[in-house]
Length: 266
Image (cartoon, rainbow, N blue to C red; front, side, top):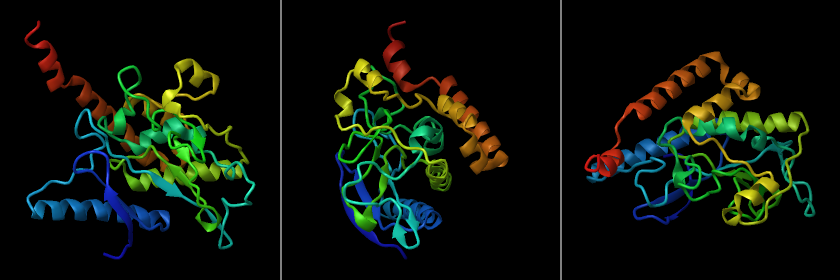
């Protein structure tokens, strides 16, 4: 189909698979994400099956994410790579846009792999819920994989497969380039397993939480001038209408959980 599958393997949950295809520019990659989703669903239906890219189709088991790797080239060389002793990634700003980026990666109340949109104590803390970065720590929101040289890159772990890849990638690029332009350094990396930190320890390390709902994330987006300028008034207006409609529909619905829990009791 015109793009190369680099790796595929079975994931943690039953019938859950990870498929990774080779990097390309942002627009080409977004096209491939959409092509892959449509093709996978069509082939599954052909064999009487259903392929779902919902972030959380079943409660109590692992959700599905869309970890996205990004790199930057300058004069044909990887701009993220400086030298072997480099301890921090090149200046970037995704962490400063973390809350508003969340709105662009999940434009739906169901966009919550591993309960990332549900604050504690009702959910396990996951990397997509608490923002931080690290080189070797897989519990961080942004991870810099071990590969160096031209393979140096940053892995953003909060996108999920329900997102609009065109808007998501555009916002990720804008956030990163804004950091480069303004020479903003990231905070210190987090090398401790974030899942095991207490709320007090997280506060001390200044590891905050991402928004707990689509409505909250959208409000952060509207206050983020960089991302608002990238998306433009037409898209922002449309996203606002979608966020309000989805939030109201979810809020006004009587969910099966409510019936199972309360109908016979009250």
